[in-house]
Amino acid sequence: MAVCTLNSSFLGFHQKSHQPPQQLVFLSGKRWGSSKRERHSSLSNTACVITCSAGGQQTVVIGLAADSGCGKSTFMRRLTSVFGGAAEPPKGGNPDSNTLISDTTTVICLDDYHSLDRTGRKEKGVTALDPKANDFDLMYEQVKALKNGVPVDKPIYNHVSGLLDPPELIKPPKILVIEGLHPMYDSRVRDLLDFSIYLDISNEVKFAWKIQRDMAERGHSLESIKASIEARKPDFDAYIDPQKQYADAVIEVLPTNLIPDDNEGKVLRVRLIMKEGVEFFNPVYLFDEGSTVSWIPCGRKLTCSYPGIKFSYGPESYYGHEVSVLEMDGQFDRLDELIYVESHLSNLSTKFYGEVTQQMLKHSEFPGSNNGTGFFQTIVGLKIRDLYEQISASRAKAPVEAAKA
Ligand SMILES: Nc1ncnc2c1ncn2[C@@H]1O[C@H](COP(=O)(O)OP(=O)(O)OP(=O)(O)O)[C@@H](O)[C@H]1O
Ligand SMILES: O=C(CO)[C@H](O)[C@H](O)COP(=O)(O)O
Image (tube, rainbow, N blue to C red):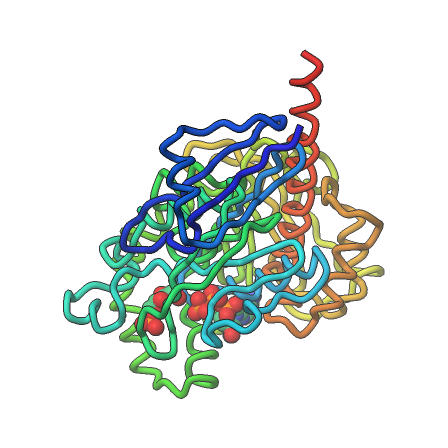
């Protein structure tokens, strides 16, 4: 049975009114809708669009939370690559759009829901991390509309000018990724997520990455970088960091334990924390599911230079949830040898032997490709593809089952 939605006013779904689009719903060829709605629809001057999906298929919504400069864009590039095809900003749109669209995925940046522009935040003395600087009502309404197959006019926060630009039209994709500071902050938005990820970069590592990027690419001084991190910290602790308790998967990035008192931040210890009992998500395991394992793979099949590589795996508790944790400390010398590690991991959701290694080799120039950040981001990308395929299959089956009953 097809479920079709006639949306008569998506172009009028403006940020000020916060009104969801008018809809007429057709089920099995019958039309369901109040006469008031029909009147509104027929009188409307706005453009119409019919979104129709076989089997009531909905958009799968993924949330990715992290502080600024913590690798969200890099992760998104790895994720879209798993689905094939390039991700690009909307064609012919605002050149400063933050949106990336590929055949399967649309990634929207939640900075677009800043309700205060740069000047407004300065005047009110709030940071972009403060919920007061963001419009969660609109975020909720628009993510819900997209999930239900209805296009929206999403605002754009322009990072170049610091202003709110006119909105851009976003059509419902197969997979919608909402990435940014607050995808799990508002419980209404959180409840719309089919899967959520938190990139948890420790302060030491965040500092090292920010210095590397902002000094080299943006011409900031060391002092100004330090000041900006310090200024954001109280709001980060209050509003961003607590979201990790809700995440289905957390990628935690810490300084290495392999070099005593290391303060260079080059060698990393990365932990993939995977919640147990999440529908359509089976945590990855090393050797034996549920056991506690420590593994040093360096030797004949994996080249390691100082300080080597150490993997660990086992069950833990995280904010009161049962989780499985896979940890990698150290870095790879040769990416083609990663196949050796991959072959010892199970539940990877790959479509063929060596797919993780292939993805890693394809993007060897991305930051984190020689350590657990790139490795685990790639694995999470494959798990999201699997989750999407399972959700789609179960939704396609549901109406058939209902029709049989
Ligand atoms: N895994 C990694 N290993 C080393 N450095 C990294 C890694 N991921 C990101 N970085 C560093 O952090 C910078 C920011 O990465 P990226 O653009 O992916 O983050 P972001 O969260 O999207 O940032 P923003 O929100 O500020 O746009 C990169 O230019 C790089 O210097
Ligand atoms: O934390 C951020 C999210 O990426 C930005 O700092 C926030 O969007 C504010 O932007 P700008 O730096 O343009 O004032």
